[in-house]
Length: 174
Image (cartoon, rainbow, N blue to C red):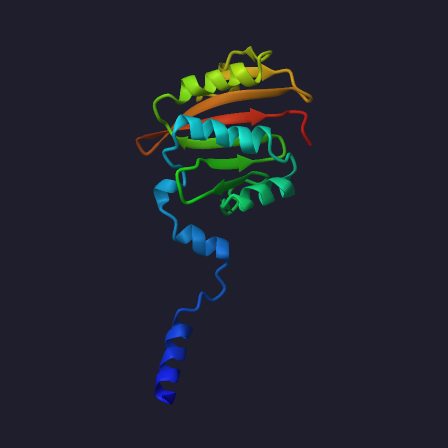
């Protein structure tokens, strides 16, 4: 019996995670394709609305809100911007003090779905020229909110795959 207990203890010790945080363990086990998944257009718009428009506007509140939904933060690559991912088909979410972005693989119907969302949610939004905002910005709207905001869509290529992002930028946010 003692030998069995000792063997069990050695096996369990070999399974120790050491100093790996829960976030690191979850990220290491995540399917890489789910870092930027193929989200359907409706889910992408709902995620944008939930976390970028309706969600908390402060960093601590946003982190708690995203974590309560199962999102895990990626290691911070760009100072001031924090990205969150989840191991399913929900899109990635990135936040800074003045910006919120939702990103997924490019899928059919995303452009139309988001145009309809902007028209319904922000009837006073005004289409603006996207070119000055960046090379990959496809559409942009000026939104008369308090503070005023910009909403844009971006399509980028990564290793032959295209990604679609929906961005809310509040220049006056602190």
